[in-house]
Image (cartoon, rainbow, N blue to C red; front, side):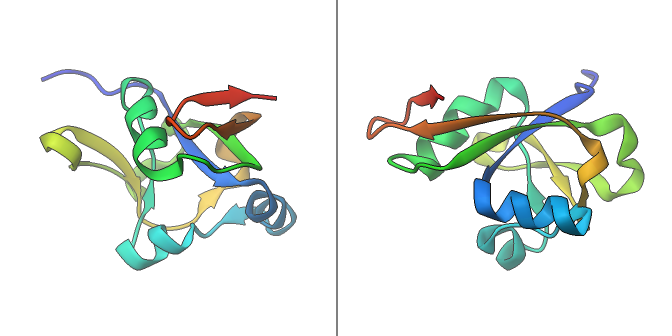
Length: 114
């Protein structure tokens, strides 16, 4: 069995993240709330996630999440193509985010960092 990485990534709207920082936790995007968990991507899954779900979007942040502090709310589950994706069942604590970077996504799905 392959070991899971210690960090993963979350793409968030910058305004939503500002609210989460004030509250101390991120409850999730509309899609997260509809699905019942917060979607994250491992490093090798990130480009596909961004291209598929965020093409043409601006005012985004790429959050680096320390998975080692999440405990049992983190579950790796099959998703796109059967690959295991990290999902958070509960709010994402702001303290679990170790880095953030502003970016936008061009029409072709490429990440453009500010």
